[in-house]
Amino acid sequence: MTRGIFVLLLLLPLSSCLISQDNCKELLVEAEAQTFDVVVVPGIPYKDGSWDMLMQGRVYWSKYLYDRGIAKHIMYSGSSVYSPYYEAKIMALYAAKIGIPDSVIFTEIRAEHSTENIYYSYKKAKNLGFESVALATDPFQAKMLRRFINKKVDTSIALIPFVYDTLSQVHQDSVILINDSSAYNPTYVSLVKRESQWKRMMGTRGKNINESYYENGALEEE
Image (cartoon, rainbow, N blue to C red; front, side, top):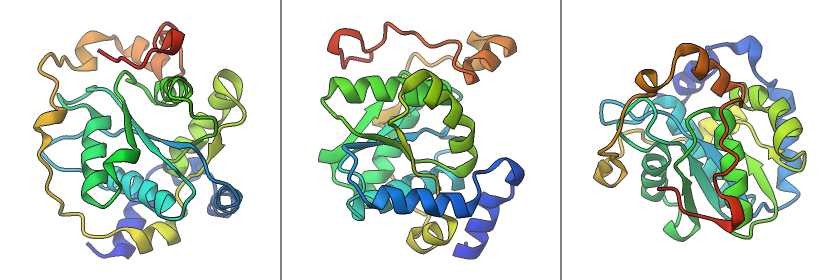
């Protein structure tokens, strides 16, 4: 797949709901003026033994931020929600394959909704002793989460959404093989079977957050 087609396909869905690319470029310039202790990257379901374009975009964007010195550490977030693989662990495996050192990669595997990705990751990051935190994702998800972050998490969290021109230059071969067995959840039950449609909708709005997770400095997830 050519880089141009890759970027076009990322841009197509819900383009009117994205943070504008001018705004994304401004946010990247602001981010380049500092180094974040950790950058949080929300997960994407892993299906059919391969990563889709959106997962590729998020992982390659995190590598760009690490390579540029914007991120000291990367935390991938996501439980086994719609497939029996922990999204965070799958993304961490791909990240290591494309050159991010294992020593700077962290995972958060409780989150089942995008609001939980940033909420739980922020709490875990603080328990790890990280001070400065940013969220790196696509412009649609960044816009969706901006208000939630400012109201329910911490206004100091920076947003670093994709700059598509830049991403198209750093995205490389999508055919990368991983051993996904370490990311498999043997007790998996799909969220669709565990929660009603109404409860899942509430989850996307941050209404299902369990505030007891990561309390008192805890790092354990299972």
